[in-house]
Image (cartoon, rainbow, N blue to C red; front, side, top):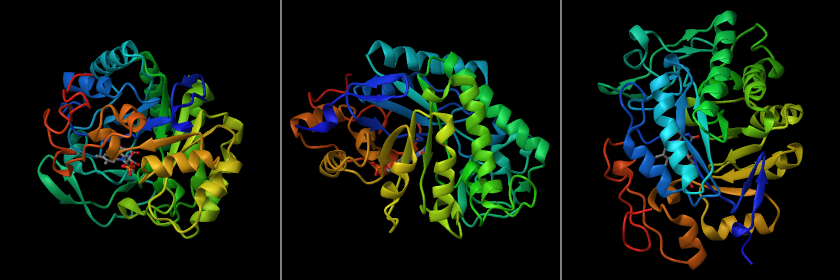
Length: 356
Ligand SMILES: Cc1cc2nc3c(=O)[nH]c(=O)nc-3n(C[C@H](O)[C@H](O)[C@H](O)COP(=O)(O)O)c2cc1C
């Protein structure tokens, strides 16, 4: 019998199945970071997931890193998200919000008054980012002062409160993919000599402070964290990722988090075998899964739930398709981040309609 369709407890929630929709930035929001009515349809169509994790939302305007990404920092943003959570709940679904600060992976054209992006240290990332004026080289960020770090930690706490007020069942810290939390954690991006750097404990402090602030607001059982060891996205490098992630995950224990979400992209080391025994909440695996590999990982006891990105993007009724062994729609990369309904809410259901 397929374990994908057995219930599982994640923090306060009981999920009817173990299929989780991955957080996916879709860039369909207003320039002010307010989700549109299309977001209500998009997420409601996918309410059959055991759990939806939303696209990443910035905790403050300085945390924005891409065009048309949403926030959870203003009343207008909250009100729009409330419509999304109400609609998903009315369809019987469960939904967490992913929270981020992109740190150096931003651009003055995206930030208040053309500010420089901020980071643990003034180290420019290689590469380019999407801005209102197209692809632009990243810039050298400004290193944060300690009192500014405390302010960002407080922003994560208020964003958590706002997310809960907007009806989310919980929040996930985006500590993957080379954004601010991973910039603090990694030796290549953190050259600080104060309490937020200098040693592994120092580099991990920002993530742990942020999680503590989120837990203080929501309770550990409504907080998750996503990491992606050795993904090396956004020019992130660490001298000893095995040691770094082992330490970080060991420090999570006292927080009683709902889950640890680990997305792997070709790392040679078996991080799931390394990290799962060190964590006390639910363990979620993501990255390049299909139904077969997801079933196998569950059967082997390697995880509690399985996270699907592209497959959920293109198949609003993914659980039903897996249940029936039905063919899958293929994601169209050209519309991943383009504005409008196309490639967002028009992937067909098995029934051949777009209706939820
Ligand atoms: C269009 C798109 C946008 C994404 N945006 C985010 C994001 O906002 N936050 C995040 O943690 N991961 C993001 N990801 C990564 C996914 O959450 C997931 O880890 C990745 O797609 C691997 O899963 P898959 O192979 O099942 O697609 C994104 C992926 C895609 C395809």
